Image (cartoon, rainbow, N blue to C red; front, top):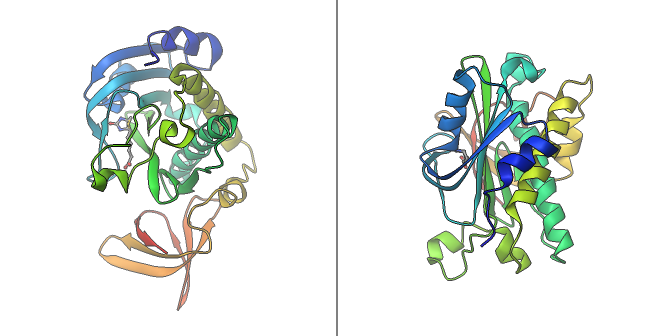
Length: 261
Ligand code: BTN
């Protein structure tokens, strides 16, 4: 199995990250990154682990990382992300674009024709199986961006209920992937995306539309206690999901897409 031991040196030398740590095992990389955000050291700081034992996702989701997966978090000063408070959800979408592109490159280089797509707001899917999840949290003037990406952790031979829901790059490409290089690539793309968010026209809706798993499909979105049913029309420039229902157009800022046809 490839190793992540040399990742911290490479990340500091080759990306915008000022310091980085590798751990064999951690509870949650988002929690460790939040600690780094509080310790007064330079930021952005990155934490990557081989195994995560109590990873969190959105809402009540959990993220358990097996050997071979890529599990990391980056903590940044909140001011380093030029977005007003009501636009912070765009950061998760921009992270999705960065991770998706890096994963798509790995797949096309391996000769695979599988295409990862984005499921608003924070999932990357291949077909309807989850390849990656993203969790952005704001804490004490900083933002923590957490990414869990299934890379060399194969689901082949795993339990049926997991195989129908999860997918990994090794299962799609039939080859082991160098996680250190992939991590460097993701972080480079992420810093470009963060820079773009600060520009007057990040064109995020247009870029998201090209790789949106839900566009033009019938969807059901759970918004607090109510369901919104309709056809997905991508996102708008604020990061809201646009759904055309029988009574008009709804813009959903926060919700869970329960089903899509
Ligand atoms: C989701 O599917 O709801 C998002 C999952 C996000 C998981 C990542 S793994 C790295 C980081 N640390 C955590 O505890 N969670 C995120």
